[in-house]
Length: 370
Image (cartoon, rainbow, N blue to C red; front, side):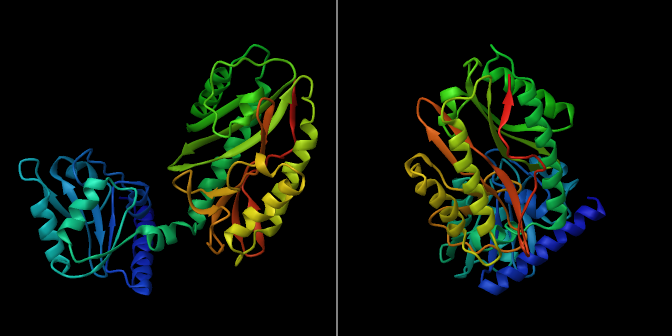
């Protein structure tokens, strides 16, 4: 492991232990998920073979299939409690819990909610008296607050996505299918050392489906165009949506665009440290509702972005998360008119001391081509 990377993961482990002390958690169990990548810089997938990291006040180690140990050892200095296929993981896990002083105690354990259920039950069956919770208040709480290294990568990927989005709009031609544009986006990201995390290209009425699966619909004159795209590079993703049209502007499109942009601005203005996340959703939603389109705003206003495209915090009507500096999330209100078009504008922001800083440099102005 490189020294710079080791420093990052040492700091995260130390911060996790401090958080565990603060809220009274004795053990954190992290599966082979994005939580493991964040905590240890490792994606130690054992397929159906149980693998996890256990962290306590004084110890941290892997439960590790022997089949994976040599490969994972190249990326982590944490101790291993290994097990062979012929033996199964139970004995190695028992040894681990005994060494950590957890066996036979009613400890408080936080379990990775993204881990396979059989992995989690293996641990919980070995700790029958444990008080259980998920990782939201430990690893999840820490992951919400991005450090400058994470911000730098997210910013870089956002700028690359700006370019991909505009290149995709520039490539539009009558007769192209949505899948043709997705292929163009794939090739663009690949040529810049990234991979496509997702790309939803929506022509005409398909834009009214917030999670449209791009297909064989062909571009014609007078169609609205919505492109929601993101890449992954160096372990982190991007996410943005821009809207426009090809040829003649669809009837009523400009009026809807002004409402959506006003909703974005209201959410941006409301986003300050100390504000509860549901107030961001309320700020955007009130604009759209007041304009008479409340029933056509079909989803929450935003989601967190980090190693995962969707993670805490969520800008929803029920979220009680208090916004703090370093949190990264989307602001993406939309109006979806079935049979006509959908219009969404999405930016990723990081919470700073004085408010939301947008990662993208790309204007939200409507994009006209054709």
